[in-house]
Image 1: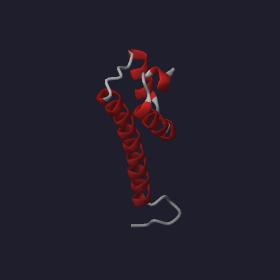
Image 2 (image 1 turned 180 degrees about the vertical axis):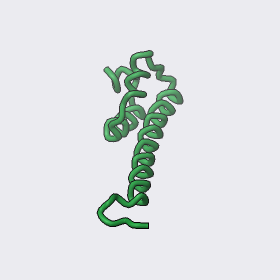
Image 3 (image 1 turned 90 degrees about the vertical axis):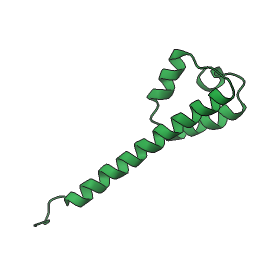
Image 4 (image 1 turned 90 degrees about the horizontal axis):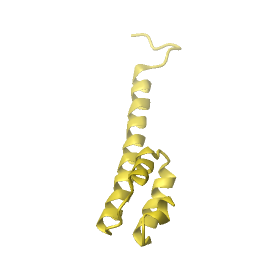
Length: 79
């Protein structure tokens, strides 16, 4: 097997795994926000659910999670 100047297939696989892990963290963070809001009985509108599902910014999701702990309505997060 020759791995000269070409991208090593193992490196490419590592990149895919890293992307998968990052996407997994984003999905988990969104689920965490939803879990906290649901446990606190703070309903989401369809638009808010779409906004949460579409978010790929882990920092934003973590900020929403912290807000969800003390918010009195979902509008405080998404409004």
